[in-house]
Length: 467
Image (cartoon, rainbow, N blue to C red; front, side, top):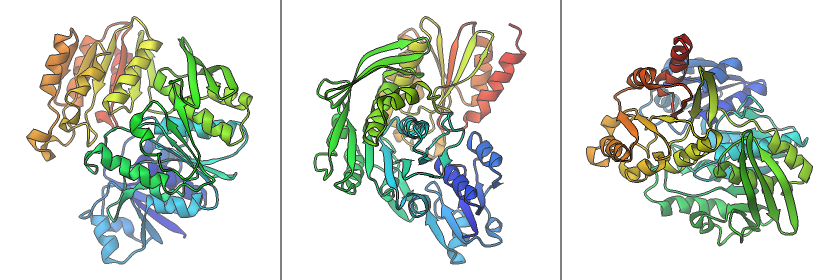
């Protein structure tokens, strides 16, 4: 292959793999309708030409192969041109499997929540111990500054998404990754646009478990019955991790500190004492627990693990501190499910006790904009003091009876003594924030998209405002 073209290149996984091919010396081009940081910046920094918008002209001269992202469907002008011209095409997971995973030990990190952080942690632990793994993460680990890296050793670490592969392959992506070592962090209902129920999601995970060789291994959240249910017929050894006394890997003595979280790990007759992680929240302790268990099995020593955890910097857009301006602290976070939202806000409470917590939430994912979380979302947001909602993403494409309705949520939060409002746009939220923010506030902007560029606009406004 001399030239690869990616349709939908600004997806996190698409951009990651595109850069890996670029690092192999292959010409890489791409196109996308929604081009925004951090992936647009990441691609530009790696010298990849990205066309805004889809057009058959983007396929000239004809590439050797076209990678079609799973967000791309029939009717897309470039897809139609690929099919009409009989160009070679493939899904992203196929390309990853055949070019980077096959022939190596494949480590796959899965689950509804925590995949990106846990994958980044595993990659960093192995890297800092000299294992030189390849990796592909659905975000940008701050330790690496890149979401993907070519392997120099025998291990490839991959974030395993249960979402479908492509319009021409409706299987979950992670079924393509030749799994040897698998982490199952947790399981909840998500991706309502492609799964009908939690049982439907569990079916995909059981298919994944059925692909793991007898020489492989699974680490599963022992506190999560939904996750435990999918490993009961595994052909390989299974170990549990969690907070419960019956877990093989158990986190104990969890204590938040001003610089992160301190905890201990018990594993059979072994103890990993006084571990420190520069992140907050029990969900991140559990991510670290899974990463420790897997890394220990791959040969890392206790001191390797201790050093790796202590030097982990986190992931871009996962409770990433953007700025501290006039005593106002601003965070960006990717959370878009009530469980992730709740755990993120609890983590902020641990980090910033006794400060007013302001949340601006962008309901954007295919599950979040529907009615599934009508009752659980206000419970998750109860940790905050001020909650500002953006309007639903692509609201007009969802039947009224199927939508998430923000007004009842606002009313419920208001009755609890919260300040809560729903707005029509990110610009309106920015205007509201500019008048209501007070010294010492902690602000978190939550979206799995660009949120209308509100992050930089808010920083600019606060920098202009007299202290």
